[in-house]
Image (cartoon, rainbow, N blue to C red):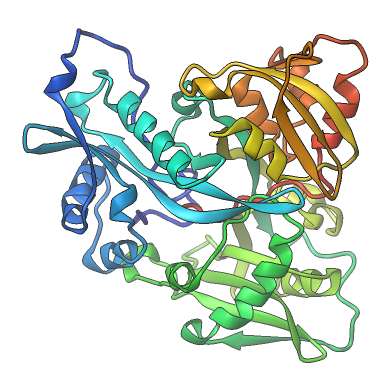
Amino acid sequence: MSPTTSEGSERANRLASARPIRYTRVVDPAEYTLRSGTADDFDTMVGVLADSFHETFDAEGIEVERGVYEPERAALAFAGDQLVGVSGSYTRDLSVPGATVASAHVTMVSVDATHRRRGILNRMMGRLFEDAQRAGEPVAHLWASEGKIYQRYGYGLAATRLVIEADREAQLRFPAVDPRGSLRSAALADAGPDLAKVYEQVSAERPGLSGRDDRWWSHTLADPTSWRNGATRRYVLIHETAGEVDGYVLWRVREGSGDKPGTVLVREMLATNPAAYQSIWQFLLNVDLTRRVEYPFAAPDEPLLYLVNEPRRLGTTLSDALWLRLVDVPAALSARRYQSPVDVVLAVEDPMIPENSGRWHLTGDSSTASCTRTDRPADLDCDLGALGAAYLGGASLGSLAAGGRVRELVAGTLAPASAAFGWHRAPAAMEVF
């Protein structure tokens, strides 16, 4: 669900989940029933979400969200006839190192405040995992309102985001130099095909991006008034080199007042080459009547960090973004590619999906991978959430081992496995679903 708060909000502008469950009494499972959603449930679901997250959703924004709602993928909890718990998934692909995989995009998870700590979230999460298994989705991922909730269900922090709050003193030291490049504005309604070309090209190199069909491009380019939070309409700027589209940015401007300067609000920015990237940022840092640029969904390895004259002026902070869970361990590890050759046996325990537990022999490289059950002794003992954190190449097994989440059982096996799980670009997380 899209919020009415600012697109740069630290809450990342989407709904996630309820507070952690602490059982306060014994609950008869028959007290609550669980079923799949229907199209007719959507408006009632919006009511539960609005109450849980203290939001107000207007009719225009609700219709945008209705356009991507998948009733059959919702798991709804009822107390009698009252809807008290909602959850859902979207059917989309996810870019991972060297490949794409089907991933359950878990969303709209909430429990009514008067029915929490009674096992409802446990049951909904179990239903979502069963649904992902039926759909052939080896992983599931989400944005979390509180990370401590989802770590209990096997999710690991797989991608972070860099929040940029730059002032105009952060000017580029290396402006774009390609004379064939140019910028042009585009109408929001007509921009989809050009933006999709850039998005697909970047997705092939950058883990963490979700697949977008026509339905999701319509959602991305929607611009309900309630989403603007006092800023301008959404603008589209496209970069071309020799007539070929190679970059774009979606942005707004929040007008300044008094001694408070106007601010450029960047929602999404992608480029396929350095010249297009530099040209777009040069524009954003010099928009008339503004003195700041806010971009809450930058990648942690954003090239801008190394292009400006004073990086401190970028006002960067790091925040969590995507949390990922392996639903089918061997299928997930076989689906991605590896930065260097890997040959390792991993020991895994999964209390929610027992068939994931055991020892898995992983072999692979940059072009192929295989993961099969084995009786061989394990080289590494991996916490399930740690595997989720490392899956997109964002967290290293070495770092996780330093925190006690991965244990080296056979000397000399951690370093090569950690290198193999890495990737040449950090995962990006710029779309909250």
